[in-house]
Amino acid sequence: MSVKIIDGSVLEGGGQILRLSVAFSCLLEQPILINKIRAGRSNPGLKPQHLAGIQLIKQMCYATTNGDRQNSCELTFQPKSLKMGNFNLNVNSQTAASIPLMIQSALPVAIFSNHNSSITMKGGTDVSFSPSMDYVKNVLFPIYKLFGVHCDALITKRGFYPKGRGEVVLTVNPVAEYLKPVEIINFGDHPAIKGFVFISGPKHQNNKNNQIVQDIATAIKNKLNLSGYHKITIETEVGDSDGSGGSVVLVANTRTGLIGSSALYDMRKSTVNSITDEACDKLLLDLEVKSCVDPNAMDNLIIFMALANGKSKVKCREITLHTKTAIYIAEQFTDAKFSIKQLDDGLNEVTCEGIGLKTF
Image 1 (tube, rainbow, N blue to C red):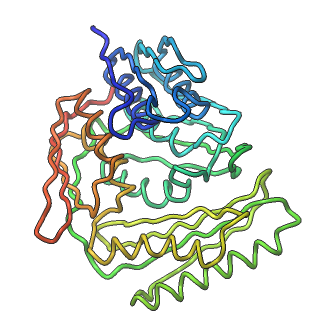
Image 2: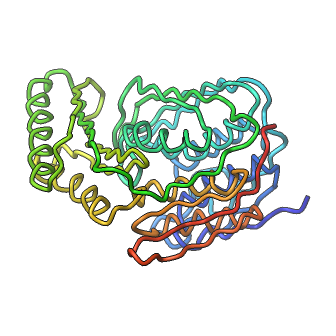
């Protein structure tokens, strides 16, 4: 089989191209060469967070690689075959590499194995330019379940920039033969909203952090109440960790869809009002136009739509550059065809006829 060449500088031009390309390469047993990796960035080439994800997928399909070193702008990835049996893997980034972004690569691969999997990942659980783990668990995983994906993640320790040192254990059940296509095109009912607020840091700061999370929870309820949303529950958590940080995740359940938003709490500059406004304003923007998923969820659904057995349709407010990049990569590797149509209500409908990849 000839090597597929992927231009690592197109569209989003960053780690997403790497993550999706190695996942597709592994699943389809397609050797790839990715060049111009992060070519448009001020610090081009592979960074520790990218190498951690590549190493994980390399283990899953016995791949041979070349160029998987820091600052390399070219990577050759040649899979052998998807590892049969229980993945019992461990990857330690030694940095604050995003664990949620490692999951973006590993989960599509693990579901097409023929046994349950357990994957331990160490790095950052809540870091910039990445979904938080609470968003992954409470927004993405329930949406993935519509495709027939059954997985869970145990957060055993939180990790933040720059040290990382967080730990997550991802457990995955194989899909039953094919991924199911989905239709997420009806907004549903007036939503119930659930919030997740946590701050983690050295133990001596627990009293202060307890007060902060309670103040954030109160502020969120007050702001959402003013916009007409009253079915609100907030879970708060204060934990111990090597570094300090936190996040807010809001999930609006409309019965036929889940809309999420999130914001990171930076101990140096965040305030109760700033993090409340960031999380609530993003959620309210999607609720106002009756989007069926939020823009950040949309780009994470593309690989599953491409691999599903049949036609999927999803309505969302915004087609981000990450979504366009995910579609571009999916179409480079598969015969899946995507279309995006702007509807009369201003929303975008993303449609895909999936290829029906079968469990190994």
